[in-house]
Length: 374
Image (cartoon, rainbow, N blue to C red):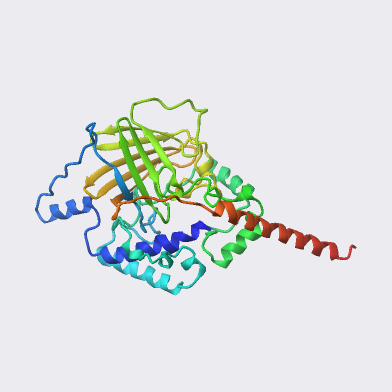
């Protein structure tokens, strides 16, 4: 399934790219801090403008990263030193080398197409987590009502009961746990991502696409369009102060409205149908939230090749408090164009998975029929 590529293409590209760049200053904001430390003035960046005078965010961008959303529990600081990050990446690279030749390593292997992973544009950062608020770099705890609600959803979806199993890791224990729980017995149990209905990195916030973490921004007077390479999904965001539709009008990705605050594009998204964040079927860091989820995104271009992206998640029915993450987008080199993303897992693999489930049911029924009755 496509999730395996989170390690193969996404992480491997990340490792090689960070190794190449780890000794350099990570992002524009940190460059400015370095300049201040040396007593030199950072040169102010003047954003380019569109024909109608708005900051120009157009072009092809990537936000690929190997920085975790949440700070690891054994890490207590906001930033690594360059030396610490270099050692961390080296350790990950050694672990990846040990998996060479495994299903996880080759399932989405760009080398078969003659594409060197190290050529990918890769935003780099010394941050220990993408979450910047709360200060501990972790998602706030769910309120008791949310814990109870999500446990009931997980049970209905037949999720494995044990821990944080990664169903797409190719680890046999995880696959066996999913099979034993009945997760693969019905398409209704499976995630929307693997069914190619909606994918990580396409619904706001723009994060956790895994591989193909690439986006094209197109601007016109009164509108901003964001095209995700993964699944070829497009968001068209009105900037003309039109109100949101009534609460009974909802969509998979929610409904977005944007406005400018100085040189920052602010996009507010409401009216989700709640299905993209269902436990056991939803997307990444959205999992567990309700249809009341509110996402506020901020896009600020800080230099010719870097755009700072910040998002805040709010849902009083899920988390004890709002939380915020921040990371850079970088201009792709070379830039585009994107080609069609054809998601065949939803067309083919689901049928194969369900056929195995039916065959196992058939064998179980035959075995039961052969047992002598008491």
